[in-house]
Image: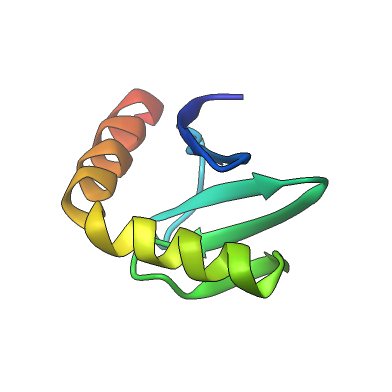
Length: 77
């Protein structure tokens, strides 16, 4: 799993062979979700408190996440 960050037991991953829109995956205590870089839930479910933390984290790191997405996509081409 290409982990890019971990906090409070939440693991954030991004894969090079993913489909648009730009997104990442969050894992927490057996729960998982795909979340767009703008914070929209694409698939899955996280506890509400964890989802708030993940969205706040993504908002604060939006530029970095978009750069990671771009690098990951280049690895795919």
